[in-house]
Image (cartoon, rainbow, N blue to C red; front, side, top):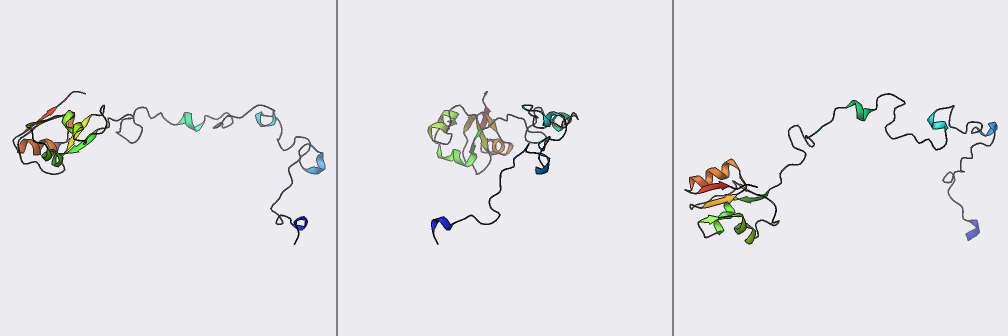
Length: 153
């Protein structure tokens, strides 16, 4: 076998379609564009979603204004940094604030609101200050004799 004997596999290469080369070619006269209309004109791009004058699908469907992800989910939900009740046991003071949680490395971003969730147990009475509390977290903190204070964002 020599380099000049190499050839592509049969059927793998197709000749380019040469339009406008006479009626006998099958692509003469209108060059495969049909008769009249936007598709037959040069430079007249048909926009995506165009349905020939029929009301396009994106205009027939209702707009989903604020509910982007689900039925009752806001488009821009508040994203909280979460801390569980069980993680509050490591603190020694009587009050635990957002600054204490950040200093301990439990909250990474400084501008993110903090929510306390009810995973784990707390044995002593502490005052916890955070932006939000789950119902179970609030119950566990108050059952231990502490207070759950909600901060403004």
